[in-house]
Amino acid sequence: MTYPIHCVDTENTLSDDNLRHIIDDFIAQKASKAKRILILPPDITRFYSKAGFITAYLYQQLKDQAEIFFLPALGTHEPMSDKEIDGMFGTEIPKELFLPHFWRTDVVKLGEISAARIAELSDDKLNCSMEVAVNKLLLDKKWDLIISVGQIVPHEVIGMANYTKNILVGTGGEDTIHKSHFLGAVYGMERIMGRTYTPVRKALNEGFDTYLRHLPIEFILTVLGKKNGELALQGVFCGNQDDTYVEACKLSQQLNLNLLDKPIQKAIVFLEPAEFKTTWLGNKAIYRTRMAMADDGELIILAPGLHRFGEDIEIDQLIRKYGYKTTDETLAAVNENPELENNLSAAAHLIHGTADNRFKVTYCPDDGVTKAEIESVNYQYCHYKDMLKRYPIEKMENGWNTLEDGEEVFYVSNPALGLWATKDNFNNQ
Image (cartoon, rainbow, N blue to C red; front, side, top):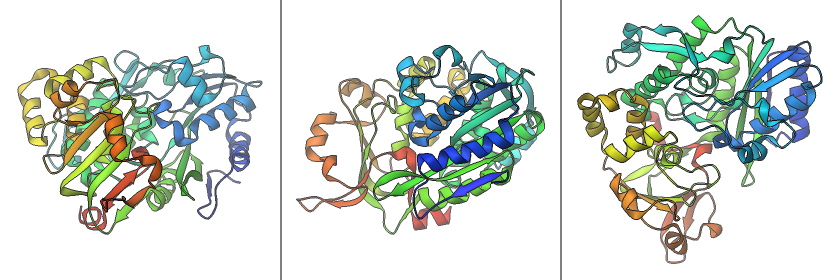
């Protein structure tokens, strides 16, 4: 295969052997002479992306010729534990090669997107500049190659995940993360999710092109879909230009957009406990389904692994203080409270996590978060085990299910893997 490498199979599944051949081609064309390599994979919250497999295979093939380090694109998430590293990347990579990214302290500002440009992109809803900054390790001139690995999938902040977002948010700093998230929130999630080019994407791409395009960064992007009820790799895209991202988006939109003929009156969404430990991540259950939810419907979130609200302790405290109120209430709180104004990604998250009183959200943790805590942030509560008795998900299939008592529910086994909307809602945005 010649570079860029775009490999798609929507009829079958790209096997692990297929994937190895694709990465071998990538290595032959882009890494055969590299002596110092930095790899930027996602963390455990993107476990199903095949990025762990790709990252481990890159190490196996290149460790004898090159010095390799790994900087997981954590964004605001906590550094990966040894157990999480083993689970995602295997046990053969020495732990000392994994370097943590601290979004508040480890970055270097390279420039900014002007306030005038942000105002233009946001339809004049946001009037401030946005820094372009990345972890200082990326700027070390010793790297012959920097490989960003990740999955393209519909995303609430930027439209479609990954590509330049993996760099400027995954290894970015406070200002970029706060303002990119808030830009997406004030512009409107429904106008963004599932779209290739959005105001946030344009801002990050422009920042990358202006300040980082000269670096030896290459992207390996995966697209996964459901085949015979199982998650399957169906596309791999290797390149360093926008066309690689665009082609991956086309496939993801084909596979990961679930457009429904009618709204959902009751949705049941399961959050895998190893992946979803906070509402910061678990609220994918809300924003990935909100365009499909009926007015006055109910979204039931089964969250056995939930143990707090924010990935970051400071943001966790802000979520507990301000709660998931309506969008207008959160915007007012930003204007009235400097601590929220200075943490715009937290404010954006509160907007992402609201149903705006349009439908009910019932969170169902096991024992990691109490009823009082759930209700304090404005969600309904039910214990996970009690709700599981009412809705035994082991008997459900993804999509529409009719229960023994005749009730119709819609089941989603992992909200991170797609976007659900009615055709009318998605096409009218």
